[in-house]
Amino acid sequence: MEKSVPTIGFAILTIIALVVFGFAVYEAWMLAPLFGIVLTAALVCLLYTLFNEAKALKNAKADPLFSQKNLLTVLAVAAGALATYTISINLNQGGVIGAAVVGLVAGFFIKDYAVPIYTGAFVGMASKALFANQFEIILPGVVAGIVFVLAAAVFAGFGGKLGTIAVTGCITCAIALNHPFATPAVPPWSVGWLLMVTAVVAAVATYYISNNMKQGVVIGSAAVGLAAGLLLPLVFGATGKTMAVVAICTSFVGMSAPKRIPSFFWMGIAGALAGLVYIYSSPLVGGAGGKLGTISFASGMAVRGFLDLLGKYTKSKV
Image (cartoon, rainbow, N blue to C red; front, side, top):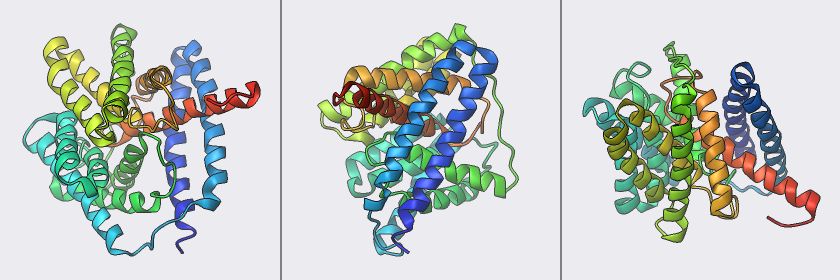
């Protein structure tokens, strides 16, 4: 059974990433063909990374499925979802601040389970229209916890993996409960350029805090998310709220390990790509927590695929 677990986890995350990225490609072709070309090329690179990661599955090793550690992991994800939802909805602080606070508390004080708790935080960013109360948010939290266990041995080092796990739980439970997703419009480019700048800055800042400052990925992402959630709405008003969402979105790609995204330059490219995908995937599964991470997950893999293809055809290692 344990031998098939990584394959199941790999398949789940691959499907979710391709659906979100593929939708962005389609929307870009419909609205702005130039960006459609860019995203199509990125999709090819994403597929190349998925091909390489699939080849590595034979070496993936999973822990015993029904271990105490895995049970506590599932509970940690559910607890992160509940805590973030409470801060976001019941305390009216919004999903960005809610997830950032939970991530910082977990990163500083519950280090052994900080990663699954932060995964649950992304579930808890879901809208009240999608999950109406604390009981309902626990359901996708538990499903995401199960997916976390299934996918633990795959895609190591790619930022956004946690969000992809989270959105799987949200989508599954929203469909099961027959709760409709929101369909927000694609932002106009009068706002889009600000979102792109935010995307690059947040990705690079997270990467710096996580790696150069040695604070780890959870604290790096949560710190950027909290700063964005508090400051950007004050400076830019309503647009700042969207910018804060983009900031925490691309902070997830900034959680990537240097072996995946090797420099600040390429992290900036990954952030810009994630910003573009955010814009054109806006109408898809609105209100689902974790979609932001999926955007970053797919974007980081696309950049890694480009670097691998570049190295293959130039005989250099990037």
